[in-house]
Amino acid sequence: MPAHILNNIFSVTPELFPQMAWQVAQFQLQHNAVYQEWCGLLGVSCFATSAPIVPIEQMPFLPIRLFKSHQVVTTFFEPEVVFESSGTINSINSKHYVKSMSLYQESYLQAFRHFYGSETEWCIIGLLPSYLERSGSSLVTMVNDLIVRSGHIDSGFYLYDFDKLANTLKRLHSEQQPIMLIGVTFALLDFAAQYPMDLQNMVVVETGGMKGRRKEMVREEVQAILKKQWQLPTIHAEYGMTELLSQAYSKGDGVFVCPPWMRVLVRSEDNPLEVSKTGKGILNVIDLCNVYGASFIATDDVGEVFEDGSFKIWGRMDNSDIRGCSLLVV
Image (cartoon, rainbow, N blue to C red):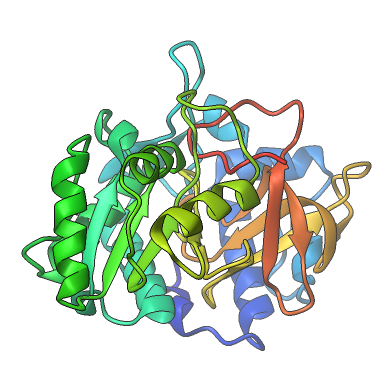
């Protein structure tokens, strides 16, 4: 990867984003066999370096399902880690072969600090039982590093010891310590049902996922329950997936905002090659950080993208597989 691109991913401006996206697309078209084959099927050849910059909505987007059947990598390398999506016993899971853990680490740290400030200001608690019970979770990797970096004695993962977690949260609340509770949806609902309390200085970040433990619920219903049980004004959320190296965050009302090096577009359900910067439909994601994987991914998530680039998730396409990190359906 050209050094000038790697060195400027996290400082990219809105004005320079299309140019950098174009450069990454050129690089991946030349060095990613799966992406190149897909573009060939679309009738798109490798972009010449002298060709005019193509608008981001005209970039070729790789269907996310190909991560289940192909090794999607840009250049040849020995991966430092392989992340795998969760699923059912009989499901075929996606795999993400990560060349550089330091690049992933910089991505989630920069994004966290962009939205929440320094991790050292928080006591960070993970409530991710289903993820901890398997290996290869990019979410666990991220949360674990944030926990360690927070440096707080009470930061950590709490599996099913709800009593200990409740006592810890009550004490931290009385000490006016900023708390961030990052949890999978079903575990948050289980904990909230058993331990209602006043936690007005806590930020709850929901990561999605019922894992078959509960019936699917709309996000508004989930958030209403959590807000009532813990007397919170808003519930935050994280939007990420195994196939990406970046995350978007919502600070309330289910509206997600991307970090500067990530963008979400929308494609038509009737014509998947018809992509727009705004509107309603199926979501496409550009993740410039994912230079050694795939930076242009056509997801199975349905939602709406607004004029300012923020977006909402409504659910998943009806014919898409149920994924472990799936967000709530409508």
